Picture 1 (cartoon, rainbow, N blue to C red):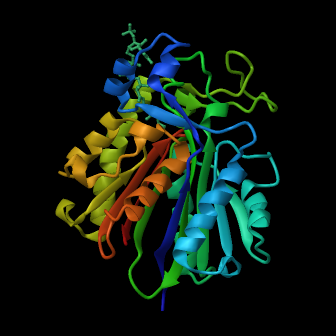
Picture 2 (picture 1 turned 90 degrees about the vertical axis):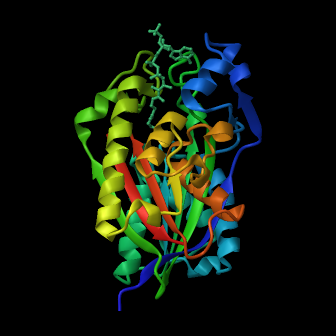
Length: 322
Ligand code: UT7
C-alpha cells in the first residue's frame, strides 16, 4: 500500500533584531506609508552576524522534531532549501545533519528560490509515497538581509531573515494530497542574485545582490498563481469551498489578496505573516504554516493550499489534509 506524507510537526525561528520601515526610511528614499500600502510589510527580522542558514535551520528543526514527538534518529531524509547557504559545499543540509547529531540519513539542499519549500515538499512526498523514506525533515532557512542591496529601495524594503521547518511522516491517513511544481528559465533576467565568486554574471557592483524588476515579477506572480490554484483544485477534484486555509508565499499582500480572491476566500482564511516578517524567500511558506498550526487556527482534518512563486521563474503548490 502506498504511504501518505502526513504533517507530524512544524517549527520556526526568527532572529531577534526587528528592522522597521521607519528604520529603512532613514537610509533610502521611502516611507512607512509607501511600503505598507504597496506591500503590506511593516517590519522584518535581521539575523545577527554570528547567525547562518544552518544555525537558524537547526533551531527551527529542533522545534519541529519536538512537536512531532519523534526521535531525531528516526529521520531518514533532510532537505534544506536556501538561497544563502553557509558554504558552496558541503550542503547546508549536511551541516544541519551534523548539528542535529543524526547518523545514517540522507541530506541534500534544493535551490528553487522562493519556491524552494514547495519543490522540497514535492520531493519529500515522492520519497514517502514510494517507501524510500519514512520521516523527512524539510527546512527553509534564509539570510536575505545578506544578499540585499541596502541602497536599493526597490528590493531592500521587501526581504527578511528566518527559518521554517516541517516534519513529514509516512501514514495510512491522508496527508499531502498533491504537489505541483513548474520552472521557466526564460525569465532569469527579471529576478536574480549572482554568485560573486563565480562571476558568471555581474550585477552593478560585482557583489551578490538581489536584482529584481519588481513590477514585472508582480504581474507574472499574480497570473501564474491564479493558474496553479485551478491546476491544484482540478487535480484533486475539489472546489474552492473545500479549501479551509491558504498558506501563501509572503511576497506582497496584493499578490496574496489576488490569490485569495481567485479562491473566493476572505483574508481571514489566509495565514499572513509578512507584516512582521517580510519576504523570507523559501522559509516564508514554512514559517506561515508553522504559525497557523501553532496558534491553533489550522485544525486536523482541514484542507490547506500552499503556494509560492520565485526566481527562475519557479512556482509551485501543494494541497495537504492536515
Ligand atoms: O518573492 C519573489 C517574488 N517577488 C515578488 O513577488 C515581488 C513582486 N513585486 C512587488 O512586490 C512590487 O513590484 C514592489 C513592491 C517591489 C514595487 O511596487 P510597484 O507597485 O510594482 O511599484 P513600481 O515598481 O511600479 O514603482 C512605482 C513607483 C516608481 O516611481 P515612479 O517611476 O512612478 O516615479 C518607483 O520608483 O514607486 C517608486 N518606488 C518607491 N517609492 C517609495 C519603488 N520602490 C519604492 C519605495 N519607496 N521603496
